[in-house]
Image 1 (cartoon, helix red, strand yellow):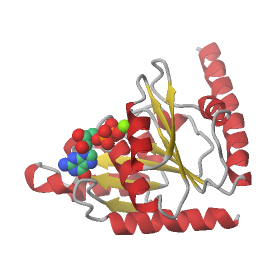
Image 2 (cartoon, protein in one colour):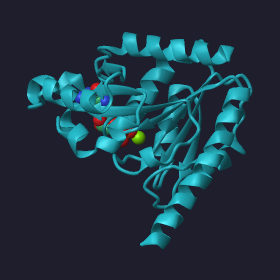
Image 3 (spheres, rainbow, N blue to C red):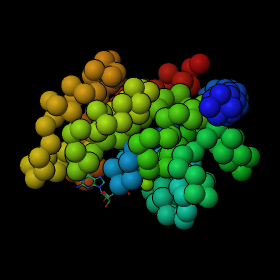
Length: 221
Ligand SMILES: Nc1nc2c(ncn2[C@@H]2O[C@H](COP(=O)(O)OP(=O)(O)O)[C@@H](O)[C@H]2O)c(=O)[nH]1
Ligand SMILES: [Mg+2]
């Protein structure tokens, strides 16, 4: 039992140290970086496509996609207009700081202002492995159901912004928004929350404005 705990602590210590190094690299390059987490199918890649579509005419964007296999998501980000790289985790259910550091070896940071990391679709593990990005962003979506903050509290506690996607489906799905938001607020009282649809574009202005502001703030640091 004690051995297990000691080993776990060591893994997290190493990860945190590398995450701090990643943060230094990102900060030195004047880049704002986010880590997007969600369950599979919530709309992470759709959100990235939307952000790249909206911002790439005036912001240089780099996307690093984590997945168990395939380069499908990086291909989508690249088609939307970003410089995109894929990390295949080979079955691991989350990205970690070492994987991101290794990806950095292949990346051209020249003129990049915004780094988007798409984590592996999973509501349990990714939040335990900081990557060194500035903000952890959770994408929740209406079809997943309104009970997820109650069932996966760790993921909702550790986030810096919440995007509630697929609000175009609200008329068709039983989703009690008050119940959902009460669960979120109990865990993370001040987290900014954005209600959006990647399909219709509803709510996107406010989200894009928030992201754009963060890019400006981190450029100045
Ligand atoms: N109705 C609706 N479907 C969406 C929305 N956003 C994404 N989708 C669909 O949800 C599915 C999964 O999206 P994807 O971006 O691949 O999710 P990821 O696995 O989290 O990266 C795709 O079929 C998308 O077209 C949305 O706002 N509304
Ligand atoms: Mg995806």
